[in-house]
Length: 281
Image 1 (cartoon, rainbow, N blue to C red):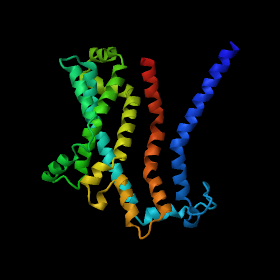
Image 2 (tube, rainbow, N blue to C red):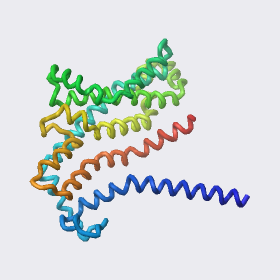
Image 3 (cartoon, rainbow, N blue to C red):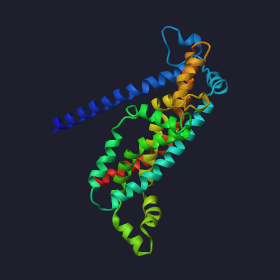
Image 4 (cartoon, rainbow, N blue to C red):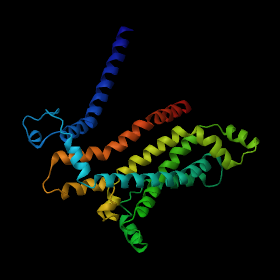
């Protein structure tokens, strides 16, 4: 029994060591970028390098915020992401509810068809889309970008929400309909309030995927004032008179900070979503 106890403890230690290595692998570069963003030029090229600067150069963030298009690019990203979330949920919620509650011929094939679209990379269809959007005068517009984002994000969102709707007993729908609700009223008055954790998880997924998109806006947008922050950072490093590592690092932190804050705000809903899935399993 003692041997089994040591074996279990050894497995726990190994598991936690693996967790530490994985966390260090992802958090380490981020901490180094934060460190660079708070250094002066002399400290950046100092040897040996230091993680913690001698003086926090907060003015790097002030310089980036006031002397570049970073605020405009962040606003553009917020606008694009907001309309993407609204459009994607407007399509995905009714579709997921229908796949969860109704039985019809070809349902299984339709679900796999939706999943097949998720496997198609936007890069494969980007050239035809460019010519198509050019004919529709949708190049250099946020509308065209949002339409593509909605089309790309909807398949996975439908699958995600369908799984959550499946975990809600259908007896709740039946009880609401007995009380006089229609099917659509049961969705909005009963199912959606219960589905807040699942919808929040879907929103986080849509935001992260849309905020980090680079290739699609890089190809479809040429006007600097319309760029999202993901492409704006790429242009930022070339519009400076000289390459300033500390300014580029500060701009990168400002670019990812909104997504981190959104994730922190919605993380409790994601935990509820995962717990609901565990209980269902």
